[in-house]
Image (cartoon, rainbow, N blue to C red; front, side):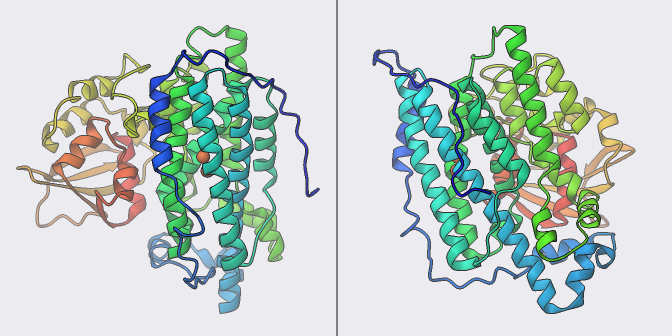
Length: 462
Ligand SMILES: [Fe+2]
Ligand SMILES: [Fe+2]
């Protein structure tokens, strides 16, 4: 790969000579952005020593619990051969993942600079400029981490490279916006919320947490700025957006496999790739990556019949009920903007807009009454204990699986796979659509004990 790559950005820059046509919501976000700046040099403790080959206890526990033979896989056999090999697998996987985040951040830096030049309102330009500074800081932080702490890095993965090129080169600026702010950043934001390798040690954990807060604003910017843009779009133009969404989502879901790591370690690439595809967590993790993208597209009116059909095949349409990023960031009121009028869940949410406390019992009754039984049919059976504190009858066990969903008050005999504990205000915020469950876990509002992957089966309900 050449060191410098040139891409034609394909769209004209625009000056805005009308300073009076304002977008107050974007201005509010811009104000927030100015007071949320951080400094990668001083806000991260670079003196901490890290071991890039360290495996977290959480990951070990997950593999120990999983019902599959890791040592028979290409990666597992290599890792099992010696401690040094095991270290190499971990360190290289870590270096590869963080490298892809760094390259993606540079993509965001360039895309946002293009957006700043091309957008046609002064408030969009102000906000985009602030985001350019954020993205520069993100590249800087990951780059310094890789150079000083991991001392290993990887070139950009082929498919990420292609996707960034397509996003930057598009002649319609809304496609650059859609590709970067809604699709790529939406996936990155969901990936951060899932933790894993991005929180493997205190330095990368701190960087990721700082970046995540910025990204939440960036995705909100995409939603706020593009809202209404697609409402009356010509069908031919709209079809172009639909193609782009479906292709980009398929690439992000299926193609991000650390093939370069397999090559560098001398593994059987075809075997390792196939095993990664069929890994015990792969399907669940892949679909969770779209927990932000889908509701955000819904907010923009882009869950058209064609996109819905494609998403249903990918198994990600269920996220349409998740909270969109602009609402989650407090920039839009719950229920504001495009929603599916036929969705009973949206109706439940609307009814709870001003409610501060609701007990689990009645909510579970409503949720299970309209659950799509076909959707739970392929789920792994799971018993999830939901313990909501600060309210009577707050402690329930939900059994999810091919037979549907059952729930009952917790008894002393229950042996749940995972327990979620939260106070009643957190529970109510999730049900009313003021926050998503993964974000509440990240913010420490939900205490999670047991098999984390089993907790994901609750998605079928929400
Ligand atoms: Fe970023
Ligand atoms: Fe960003």
